[in-house]
Amino acid sequence: EISGQGSARELGATRARSPAMGACLTSLLSLSREALSDQWQVFCCMRRDPRLITAVCIFWVERVGGGLGAPVAPYFLLALGLSAPDIGLLSTVSLVCLVLPAPLYGWIQDRHGPLYTIMVSSAACALGCGLRGFAQNFWWLLPSAALAGFGGGNLVSTISAHVATETPPARRALFLSALAVQGAVLRTCGQALYVPWDGTLQLCGLTERLLRFRVTLSVCTFFCLFGALQLALTLTLTLTLARSAYLEWIRETAHLIKGLAPNHMVAVGSEGQG
Image (cartoon, rainbow, N blue to C red):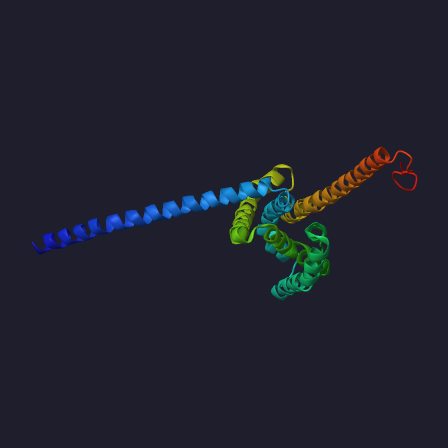
């Protein structure tokens, strides 16, 4: 009888907890749907905004490339014979080179815009990744770590600063948090790609593990170089379009002046350009 009463009480407690658990799960699902909806809206806004799409696209590509090489980086250092103090010293060099140029990046971004800082960061990151892939010992890795801190370490902060500048204050926190979530997801995707990537390298005949490490780490160069090349093309195209628009404005102004004063001499262009 006592056992039956205990079972009845446990059953009643379970039934009492069931509605509460159901309400908690419903609330979590509702919050998850709302968060996913916000993330998707921010992603669409970034994709359609011409002021953000170039920088954000570079950020997306760099996160995938960095994630692809992350699983092999410590094993590569150990395969080269580095000790724990050596690896710690490389991390210190990278951190110092990340912190020291940060004010310079901020000054350049304030004076000349974000494209130059992002382009320099991407180029330095690509050079550091390439040098790391060819490294033979600790002394090769020192400049690689310095370039990685100077470039790749500051790339995320410069892009985040650009997004914060171009975003309305009311939505700034949402955009920056969404950028952080996107970066974490894409880096995780890059890490997940390592297994099929390494399998593909083995199928191509690269059986030596250290050689596969070098190839994987060197591939990051192309992900970083994508940003530098894209910005170089963007700047070239922007300057070309600006020059064309300026010359067109000069021609229209000259045509207007000639229409208002036919006897007035007007020269269009300069230094032989007419």
